[in-house]
Length: 96
Image (cartoon, rainbow, N blue to C red; front, side):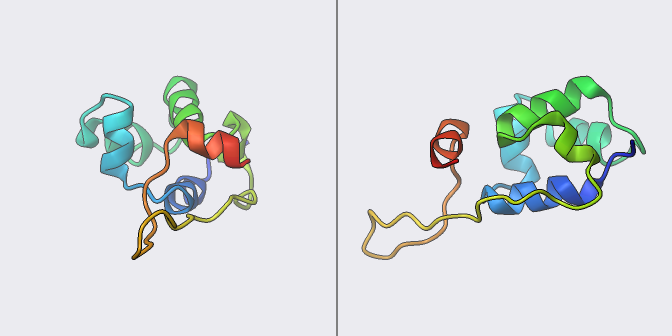
């Protein structure tokens, strides 16, 4: 199986997150995270597991040929001007 970097991009978009947001959740420097994920042809299973957990995806999703179905970002309708906001892992798990 081959790592598919498009999965991470799609997952971050669906979760209204940036790479910087993900690095904060993982308590890593964004440059270190990019190095682990983007600069290697095959990231280690340890970092994939951590990223998968934060994005509420199974580890194997990062090895699929096409991105799995993910809930797109949802606007926060509690506001009088709803806009898409970052969701916590727990919120995403409840929505699923």
